Amino acid sequence: MAKTVVVRLDGEWCMVVLPAYMKLDLDRLRIESGAKTAEIATEHEIAARFPDCELGAMPPFGNLYGMKVFVQWQMVDEHAIAFNAGTHHEVIRMAYADYE
Image 1 (cartoon, rainbow, N blue to C red):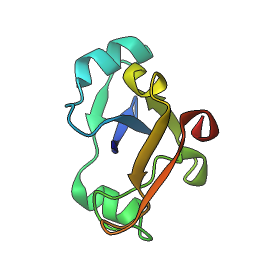
Image 2: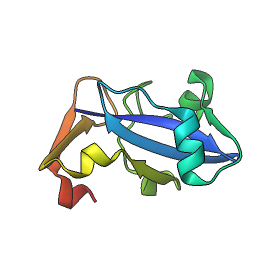
Image 3: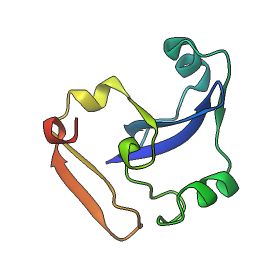
């Protein structure tokens, strides 16, 4: 199961997709992305930015929201990826190659 974390890198909204059991290392993301600043979006900001989704259930399709997407490398090695489909009751499962 994957989770989507919404962040701002140098003020630009981005998504980070990682296995649900992992915690986001914000400093490492900042360094790896070359950003000067990295912040996790607040719940209020997320609710405003994703009005069509339940809080914490955003699908990892940055293209739908005009956002870059960073994927944790462990996800790339998986045959399939599963993630919330905008609600906490619906899940999409697809081949990782199709997601990519």
